[in-house]
Image (cartoon, rainbow, N blue to C red; front, side):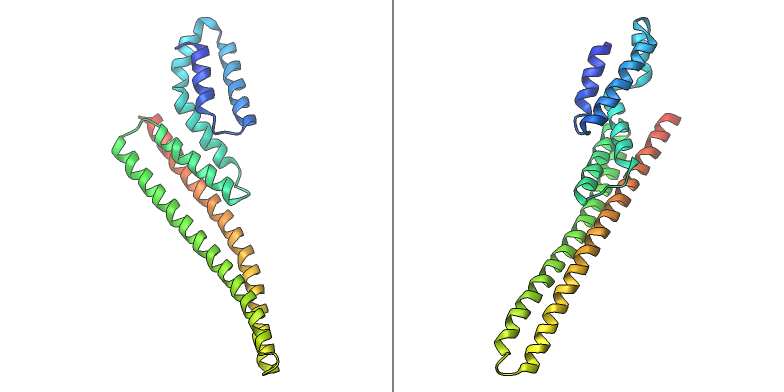
Length: 195
């Protein structure tokens, strides 16, 4: 493998990163090769490791350097880390077990967030239906009308509060999950380097 092939494979392996991050990494490695010089090209390639290993490390670094701002961004970062874990050539059974555990945690997290979101949406619609239904008893019993109207408004208010809380919790949990995955990958890298 030569410098051009190495950089081409690295660029392909970094396609999941944002454009700016990918170009910064490619520029860094181009400068690294320039400093080493053409006579030390093979030695430089051997010391760097494979493009897949470098890309995995860069994806983890990107995913863990800043907490996600949205659930979607956090999910993307979590998947980057999961893919990076599988990119490292370590004991296959260990990787399968660890990957399965991480996917299980991610699935559980996703299920909790979706169920809380569904409960919030259901509460919102229940509030609307209760408010509309309260007008059906207005003529028969004004006290019942006020009771059901208040109940519907309380349900709407609670759903708005829960919606905000669920979104904040989801972003925080995605950040926590991403940091956990990054920590696991860094431990694996350290163990691999020590071997």
